[in-house]
Amino acid sequence: MGVISAYRLRLERRRWLARAIRKRRELIPVANRTGRLSPNAILAFSTIRNERPRLRYFLKYYRRLGVDHFLFVDNGSDDGSAEFLAGEADVSLWRTDASYRKSRFGTDWLNWLKLRHGHGHWTLTLDPDEFLVYPFCDTRPLPALCDWLDQSGIRSFGTMLLDMYPDKPLAGIRYREGQNPFELAEWFDPGNYMISRNPKYRNLWIQGGPRARVYFAETPEQAPSLNKTPLVRWDRRFTYVSSTHMLLPRGLNNVYDEAGGEKASGCLLHAKFLDSFVAKAAEEVERREHFAGGREYAAYHQTAESEPGLWSAWSEKYMGWRQLEMLGLMSKGNWA
Image 1: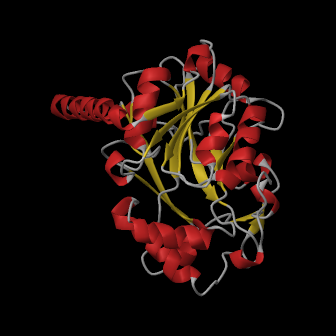
Image 2: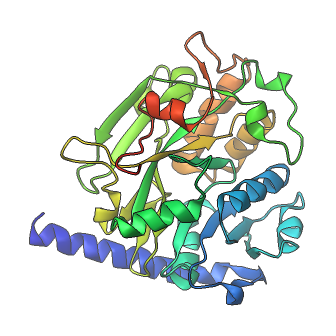
């Protein structure tokens, strides 16, 4: 990389950090318990809006995995989400009614919270419908993975977002608060993925799966990106550029082996497709607070009206992380 390009990327990183500092004024503390954090605490960050039914299982899952503290931004929920989170002892909560779109879809808010509270910690940045699986996650908790990454000199851990769905139309299922969503959404696409490399940030760009197959069949290049780097040993100099798809400094995006081998990686099981999805898509089309004016949600809403379902004859039922590794969707690399 040339000197000018490196200089421009440094300027861009500083610009995003400065923007995050300005955006801190939009956050109102509701329950700030970060004074209790231990130096080795693993932290999870998330922006939410009206996710009350999902939150109980989300917290249970990540507590069991080894997250010590959760930092949430509630963006104008009116379903009791904020009240529920404020009562949890291992949660810190901020609230805002500011524009999600103008915060770069929550990225600015969470960049600020990581700048303020994440320095030196292993941090997870997640949506409330994303559930991390990684090699040996059934026997080795998250602190074991983070210890191995530290010993290996690795500061970021890459994943693929794996859309999970039921084998019937969404209207035919009923999700109960606190339920494991993968009791209902047990299926995924084992193939049908396209991978390219972003030349500017050097991250992989992954598209495909059921959303490209069903909602973007005519324009697969417009399908959502599935590459994410949610787990990072955070430093106050770091910043996410676009959701968790890419970071600066861009060396953090090198979560794959350029020499042709395999680095350890995981998957984020994506529990987006439950019975609330159709109503959620309609709401977001109206709000226009998501990327490209809600183009993605417009595609969901238009197609969901005919209720085609996402299951196909090529769908595969989820059995565990070893299955995903065998399919080439994640890798244990040299973590034995």
